[in-house]
Length: 152
Image (cartoon, rainbow, N blue to C red):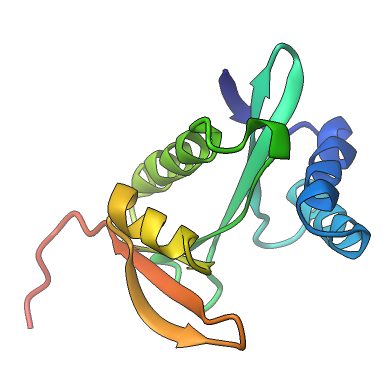
């Protein structure tokens, strides 16, 4: 399996994975968000794909927060249903965490997850639940990646 940056021509393949996992409505939403990687916006998300035998089997996105440039947010962790529970998502998350850690200002990574994924992110990556919200009890989770001690 190879993990690499998304190409513009692969947006529909990633959106199809979202449709398989969720619905046609979310397929359209994800396609629009994936396209934003290639726009001329002030802050564009970055997407990585997992590829196996020249076929996209998963993808993930992240962006620097507009609220605080020391915070990064991970989203759209999606793996084709036929490839789930084989470590694809874990490798995608590890890749993005590694890329964010390379940013000189990175201090905190955020993501949102429901059970059982919230337990998975806590166990495998060290994310902590900061807040529960919504009818499905989404966990707003954070991972501190500070490189320096902060003096109070």
